[in-house]
Amino acid sequence: MLSSPNSTITGNMPDGSPHTPPSPRSTVTEQALRRELAAAYRLVAHFGMTDLVYTHLSARLPGVRHAYLVNPYGFLFEEITASSLVTVDADGHPRQPTAHPINPAGFVIHSAIHRARPDAACVMHTHTIAGMAVAAQDRKILPINQISMEFHDRIGFHAYEGLAAEDNLSERERLVRDLGQNHGLILQNHGLLTVGRTVAECFYRMYYLEQACRIQVAAQSTGTSLHFPSPASILRARQQFEDDTDQGQLIWQALLRKLDREQPDYQT
Image 1: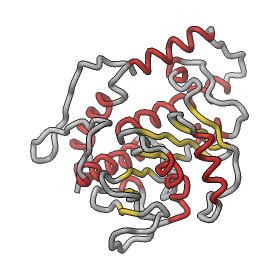
Image 2: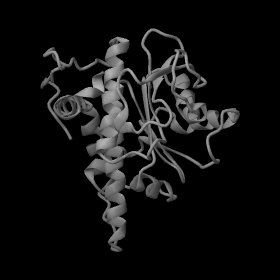
Image 3: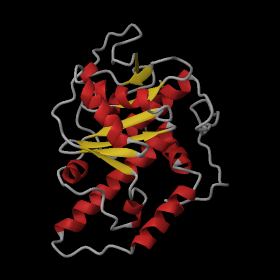
């Protein structure tokens, strides 16, 4: 997972122009953001992290107050394209003409986090078997593998309160409180959530949080006692990950090249 921060690899668009990795401090165009988010939907589908037409990945539109991109309700993630994404306001209601339904209730969690965390330009939420299995436990991500150690004390925990509802403003406050400044949340009895300054960073965190959950469930299924490294080793490993400035960009560029070869229509 670690890579050299000085390495740069770019993929190509269908017209031959290179993908440009977005900087967390730069402003991307709406069209570029649409392509990035559509790519994330396709990759979540590719890696088996979907729940049919449910859950959402969202991104804040640059330079527009309370405007976000989200998937049209009822579409499989493998169907999402840059142009099919819908611009919504902070309550999940469309800000553009659209023939497709939007599920405002499904955007409740996203809107709360986008509003409270200016750095959360992208929010991803999944219902996976491994993620929900860990969310059914009272313990957080166990530091039993170096992938898991990256998330040590960096993932919040939110107690289950029922289906997210538009009128439950108090739960939004608790969601924000439980997320704090962490990289993501385990939504107890529900699923996983990650945030990122870019789509690439958010996807990187979701992919490896999912891997940490799969490792945890697999290790627990052996029925043997689990080995925990020393606290000092866990903190050292986490710091090594955090010192890496790449934060998934090399992986993201490789994945975009894969999509360009296999599913180039995501950009349309």
